[in-house]
Length: 69
Image (cartoon, rainbow, N blue to C red; front, side, top):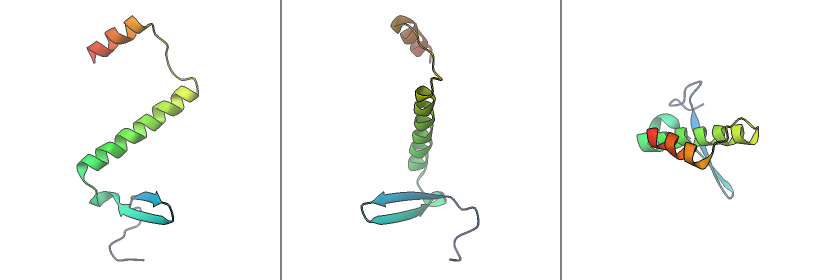
């Protein structure tokens, strides 16, 4: 194993056609880390939606709740 890799180190895996690139999470910019966290939240929300774990509201109620955020 390489000396700069520790047990439990987290990696971002990027697949592009026939290449696989591993990037250490600790070396990523804060903006990219934020984007990855957001993508994870979106994926969870989408899975919740697909599994029926969501609330339906009338458009007006939704917009009022959105304004409060």
